[in-house]
Amino acid sequence: MKNVLSALRAPEHQDRVLVERLTSDRTASQTYTYGHMRAWADELRQTLHGLALPPGSRVGLVAGNSPEWVAADLALLSGGYTEVPVPLAFSAEQATSLLREVRVCVADAAGAAKLEAWGLAGSAELVLIEPLPKSAALDGAGSPESPGSTDPDRIIKIIHTSGTTGAPKGVKIRAAGLGALLASLDEVCPDGIYERYLSLVPFSLLVEQVTAVYLPILRGGQMVLLPQSVPLLGTSGSRAEEALTWLQVALPTAAVLPPAVVSALDKAVRAGGADATALFGASRPPFLMAGGAPVDAEALIRLDAAGLRVHEGYGLSENGSVVSWNTADHWRPGTVGRPLPHCSVRLSDESELLVKSTSLFAGYTVEDPTSRPVDDEGWLHTGDRAAIDEDGFIRILGRLKNVIITGHGRNVSPEWVEGRLRSCADVTDAVLFGDGMEHLTAVLLTPVLHGDTATHVEYRARAFADENLAETDRPERYVVLTDDKSLRERYFTVTGRPRRQLIFDEIVRPALRRAA
Image (cartoon, rainbow, N blue to C red; front, side, top):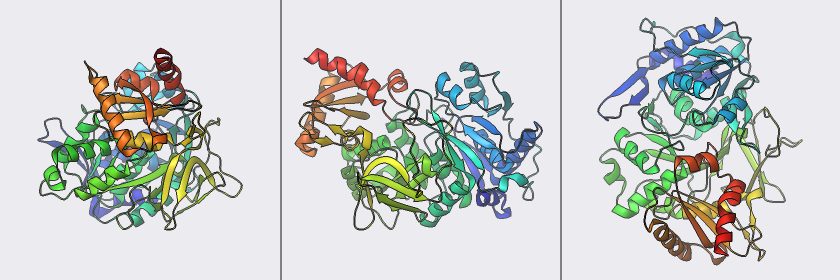
């Protein structure tokens, strides 16, 4: 991380724009230079030092995707603290679990309001991120980071990941580990793609910190933030289709897209016969990356033909995020690319993907049955089934524990089928069930249900499955639901993963009983 902080303070970068925040009217924006952000982070770091926190103390970061979040993150990195970023979309139970050992929270106005709503306002000392100091000195490189912050093995972040209950556990990220990951990504990323990176998902996700904050700083580029009033993807009120509008308005050079946005982009291209020029005009199309869940390979091929190549990758917080990636030079749709230079991979006898790298985590805050072990030889057991072809490209087949074995003894990977079903018109998400049952059942989410909408969505999904899925992978029954806030909060994690057992118990099982 020292390279990131050095790039932040580089004299040649001080007058460049680092953070641009778009406004809702799309006609103006707020901009902050490297010099502004460096001075802001330095002042906040001095405020934290005034609290006499011991080196390595855990400090909560509760803020939206804002310039304030970036300033606080840089202050915590340079100050030698352990940052605990908390998603604003968390429930009170989840936030309480993650902040249990935190005695100081840094927050912007939105974060302070959330702490109040969670009932946590008095549980830790609050450091409210003040506006950018008007008197900030912008010349020179600013004050250096704390001496204690140079330890490569110190824990610099605790990142949330799902546990066996509603309460998350924390993944401990090492300074040297995150530094190794950034160096590896910097090596394989094309020049110029981080000149103007558009951030669409919460900064509380480690991969977004890597791609939206640190890589732009390393390259002397800038990050572009959505207006404060626009919901981030994966949060309440967000819509994948709206992200397409901001991709056109912001004209970024790069963005990471969740699979739902890739599907929306594919649907827009198919519906209107659009191509890169129609969507982005004379400007070059952005360098698009995707991850988090399987993406339909056919959609990737169609988008590529339209001049919109999407580079799918794979990662997990236990590796500091990215493990493999389809790079500009090595692109194979249907795979998640080849391992990054600092990673090695192999398959177990059960086809589980194992990863060994210099960016592996330093353990969890809490161990539970969902923990991913590192064996005596240093291999991380990811829990994902995979195949590796002769050229080293990895194909993720699904979670080991999620494999469906039907009543006929057929093995079905639900994640692959779900990725295909997301390509259907009006389908925003899909979850597949069928373990021990004669037939498969798919739960489909659609933006709005009215009249015969459910019937039409099911009809199109059946037609799509008949044409694109093997008989053994086709659902026999469909349950169509409205994709709204309450459903997302109860049945999906904050990172968008389905709570499969809960969905089955409360939605699928009753639906099957009614149909019997």
